[in-house]
Amino acid sequence: GENVEQHPSTLSVQEGDSAVIKCTYSDSASNYFPWYKQELGKRPQLIIDIRSNVGEKKDQRIAVTLNKTAKHFSLHITETQPEDSAVYFCAGRMKTSYDKVIFGPGTSLSVIP
Amino acid sequence: NAGVMQNPRHLVRRRGQEARLRCSPMKGHSHVYWYRQLPEEGLKFMVYLQKENIIDESGMPKERFSAEFPKEGPSILRIQQVVRGDSAAYFCASSLGMYQETQYFGPGTRLLVL
Image (cartoon, chains in turn red, orange):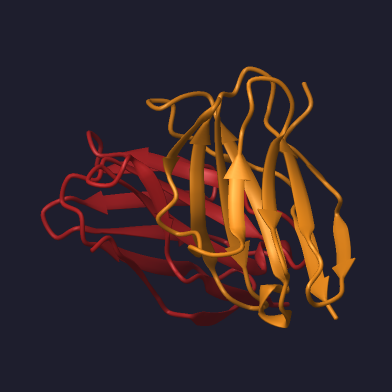
């Protein structure tokens, strides 16, 4: 069935260091992979997304890479700041199931000042 | 341009009562998705609707739960005879259309069943 796995489940980094979160997906036909950030008690907010026709996308301190062959994609946050602390969800759009978006279980990122 | 709206933001119900959660998508969006989030857990897909159509309800419990998105008005997620295990945050998201994948989330409704 459709599945998106995400690692690690928790991540602590020192302010200024980089953070990397990795996800894998099961549906080889998936073609759209968004990342959401959810602060405590708030709604998930889209921070970056990537489509399967590109291998990397960057937006300031955030970048996402996609390896279609291996069916995995990663979020990279450089020069982390305390306000980056949140839960991050990766997701994949499952072509085999009405194009619905399946979310990974989330990574709780803590940036230590 | 208002974002996705949900109401109520907080809802308290006693066991056995009904809960009605409403979602107004972003202007121009015709696709609505409902997700449930338990404390410190991820987002679980429940149902995907277009105007007057349920596209995929594979994530919704077969009993007590129903959803609709009428031609006019908000999408409604209805939970009948609520139980304590229904306590969660319910988020709706909307997108422009089938091939416009980006989903934008509402602020959520936090349901507490006493």
